[in-house]
Image (cartoon, rainbow, N blue to C red):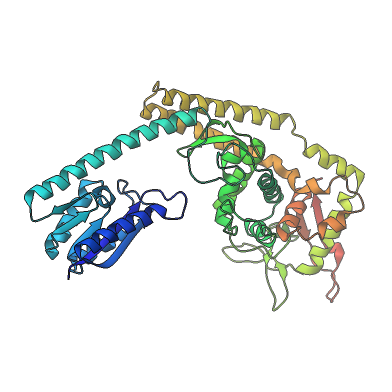
Length: 466
């Protein structure tokens, strides 16, 4: 009995149905049957190129099994299914030599490793396949560079969320989801909360099969694609040929907030509405969560990580309830609404920064164009790019500070209905904190005048922004 391994591989399974793999399998099984060989193992690598440096798990498993003497022969549809690099061929030849496995058969012909001519033929095939792959890769890279410079989408068999398969036509129902997710995120809601909303509403990803997860949502929101920008090799190279779903300003604000979240690395869910905004009235240091049994408290804490006096504490529930009432009352005042409306309109400094950012990005676009047309070497382009990027990021961070009014957008021009909006199902703790942070800079807690169960509201001193 000749035990044979069958190896099947497809570089791109765009349809996801494995039909090409099935055709390879049918032909290989027919060949094994015609020779009386017993298929003792099958190894399948899907969506894996044999030319790239990415590992092929099933190929590695097969080579190890051959080296261990588990097979007497090897079947594949074509030699290029097995290898497109000489290094892979030599590893396979070594394993077959160690195990005395001499038969390598394909649908298009056989090779006997015991025959010097057969091994030489395989080596020539591997060299030719590597050359073909390298030539094709250079041609594809050049074509991709040209499409990127023209603002055209990357050719892919996968649909991007918000757009049809052509990556040019907007899917309006999905665009509405993207805009709402962006609005919620800029209003202070966390990615976890937004993903929960999408799951609760039964919204699926572009494949229609998967539920939303925070990494997928993060990648979507930070993608320049939805702002009508063309990204190529990790860099925005200019305006895209397809319509934008969100504005460029919204994209910049989302990117800034994601960068800030990554820098602070805050992963634990918010439990305190006023975290970071409560300060001690004695020593002036920031107060932190300081639970007492089952009660939530804010406390001035001392020690090397805090530096407070540890003399001021206040229960969280009554403090937060008082501040919420004060915020809603203030938001309902006509003069406050007028001030908020002004924050929602970019002022002269914002316009200046926006113009500066547009100029810098135009310079980046010009650099990319010069590099694409070979007017700059890669070294010159890299040096110029590295000089521009810090300036772009600095302006982006400064622009992000003008998003203060975002959390208040839903609370303007709605006198008398603020309480309903505050208690709406989609008004998460993160969004509530963002609204408070847009109107309130800090809360100072002074010493209590007397001990008792009731909170002395006179010890609470809000400091308002508007």
